[in-house]
Length: 454
Ligand SMILES: [Zn+2]
Ligand SMILES: [Zn+2]
Image 1 (cartoon, protein in one colour):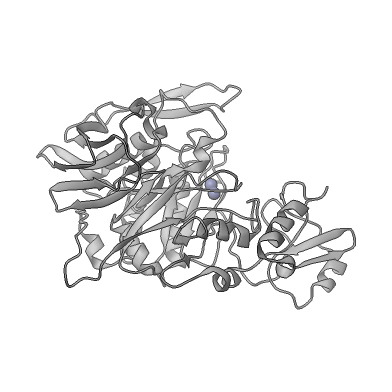
Image 2 (image 1 turned 90 degrees about the horizontal axis):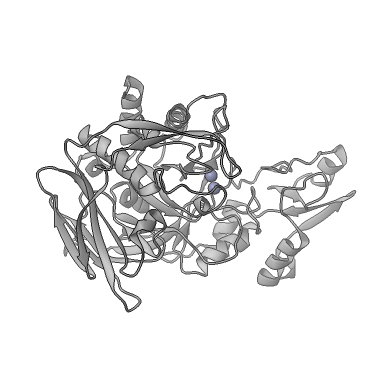
């Protein structure tokens, strides 16, 4: 199953991260006297604004997270970076650029996006969106210019947003983008490149998601080798089981995926009889642990397009400093957790025992469940053929044994530990409120998840 190329890609990717991460066991250490004190930082590495198809102007979107206590964000717009270069055409907004328009913007920089009109109906850039930003940042904060029958709005560039919002030790912005597209049959395969400022065109005409992931990862490794960056496999369940665990079993070089994505709550109706993101995760990790490959780590993100309601998914990262490379090291070493509402005060793994402590912010009863898979589990994959309906397209969905991702131990309370037994492949912990219905699986809310350890 694992071919030569993926092995080579893995080695190339490994060279991008620091040496301790290459060990097969992931070890979170408690800070000793010699080490600087580590803290938890809250972040979201997947969001959208008017640079692509998000609703608000870029400054309004960044401010939304900063004012809600986030410490870092990556404005990961679809297939674009918020660069200085002058342009008018963007994701889902392709106005005719006349010589008159070109002349009127000579010497200007950045994306000048036309207001929503008949020619560009899908870009959501309305007078209300402009006013929303002007109300917040001042009448002169948004530049507009009218040429002929079109009014253009200037988007702030990444560097301008950095100047406006970044504060040392408090708020960090990380460059990046979402590689957006899909296979020839329409199954979506989206991936984030985080920590990069240059995009490349989506690799088209690919038949299988596993191949899309493999080629995109390899192209990224080729282009972005000069500095550390992250690659995430996004929302496998969107729009409807578009790629399954086998795609990540075939790509062990991919270390990060979205366990929690706000987007998966929308669109097609979910099927509780098919795999859920947590089971997807366990299927991949049972395979990887058996084959002595680095485990797949889960991230939480908001993938926010519309900014109504509160934030629904994020990642907490433990680091001594709020610096891009320090956060990347912590993320790739598993010193982070995805959350949709709860927090850990402590997560530690000493090579054998996983200890967790909930950071209780609201009185009540809590549960800790330790989940894992035993050696010798049944790895059989069956294919469930789902017919097209009003709520979903036709799909062939992978189905795996119930022996994968079993409950190893449940603790009533806010503190617990689990020591790996000789027949355990790995262990991870999930925390939730005791009055929640665990049969909801991934929908349990609020909850938080440790990474898997072995
Ligand atoms: Zn996406
Ligand atoms: Zn997205």
